[in-house]
Image (cartoon, rainbow, N blue to C red; front, side):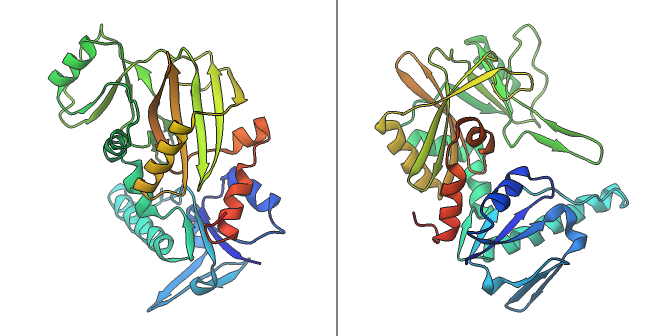
Length: 307
């Protein structure tokens, strides 16, 4: 039985689901970064040992690694100045493990960082020939004003949009730009503007694992961002044109990804690429529609990245 180390956090319900569903297929070892104090991790020369009350494993014995979103431990007892240093050290500690452990990984932090970068991702998508709404990423208020004055526009996060501190967990999502309000100085706030495109043919989430894909059409009463709380969404399994699927494969290859959650909108007769999330959520679609995304992920981990 193959041994899989999962780097995640204690509230990751998707990992709970995977371990419970496939406990007879893989031997799972779970490291919750937000509970770092419950683990002892030693990097002694070339040897890496991870142990806790439930297991003890050496890096050389790990066959595959599943790297999820991490959450920092509670550092409220430390001074705010020291917290920033601790977080950098913890991230370096965890990412260092994730870069090395496992013969295969879904997905190494260095690949995630590069492919999540909106500028890098956008340019790669242009190269692969995707249709993309008019876009401006800028720190110039004048350029932003010129852009939004010529079209109906949205503003979206340039990074992940997740905000966390000791008391607040929040997400900054896509919003319409209000042209009636002046744009403040954004010289230190790089901002991501995009032309708002009518979703006449709906929105699409397409989840890829290697050469396998799961395409879902999303119809929502929220015409700006279906992910917002309170949105009423309907889901339907669909087939996409092979030309779009092949572009997705090429973009994933360019970005170095084996997993990607693509978002498209369809209007007129055109699919417009919005983004690919290299560590995107998928469990709700499996639950809603009976998809076998988890089987694809487990097969990847079980077979060394091959299907």
